[in-house]
Length: 362
Image 1 (tube, rainbow, N blue to C red):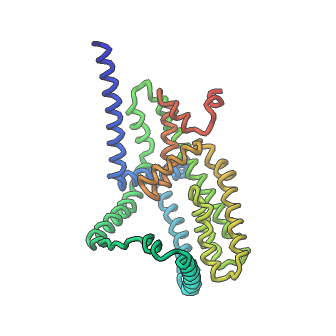
Image 2 (image 1 turned 30 degrees about the horizontal axis):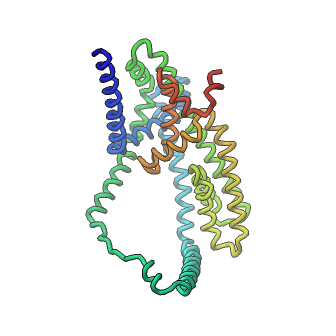
Image 3 (image 1 turned 45 degrees about the horizontal axis):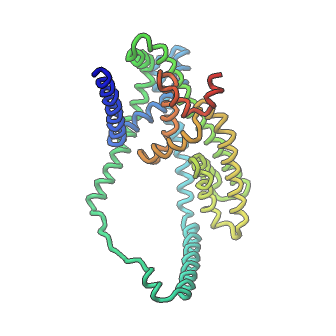
């Protein structure tokens, strides 16, 4: 009877864990606006904390230091945004020239496709063409009120992030020491030392991820902009900024980075040579960034293997879209740190890690 009770208890605990995991994922999906705002605030707070700590060491109170750092960060972002918007306005004023080239290209592609279709139709018997022709079904379009409600929901999520994010970052920076002690007191006395080590490691990982990616993005934008300027491409720094940011997109970045220079180059180049050269140069920048810069500036802190990164990008991207792709690696790296410092979860941490378990023990 005792053995049966033990088996029943273990079975119940497994079921409870599955139900708890389901509830957690349901909350993450249904309350995505709130959760994403909190996670973005934590990530940005870790990024800005060294500047606030520096001001604290020169005897400036953390609350005032947090305000100063937030104001300085906002001013820098506003200045960069203003320069970017100016370049976008210039490009928009010149857009008719590019749209004409794009329309001509689209017409040429349509003619080629129509010609291919015509040749296929001539070679195919009429009865097979009629049999292969798909049935056309007219689907009811979405009602206007559904589209309006969806737009209001997206606007609400954006307003929630914009409104509460600065306040959350300020409170996290200003009350860092109080939050740190309060978090440690959530654990039993015997576990506080391990919890403190885990929290310190999480800070190192998140800060290294943010700083490393910012440096890689800056290097890619400068290299792309300088290359476009050297080949006399119109709007070189606008194209370089967008191309450098797109190059950081996992897996697809090498191809997405081609879009801005290709779009602008369609109005300048009449042969395929410049397009091939731009594609080759941007692919070279992407390979250098992924294989040298990212491992050197980000990989040393994050320490995730390629399989774990791929699964994380797929899952969090599916759950939260584009923001999920941004937060996938920090979330997975934090989970790895927690597993490394939690008894019984170390195998999962080793599975997520980038180093061989035998070498890690040595």
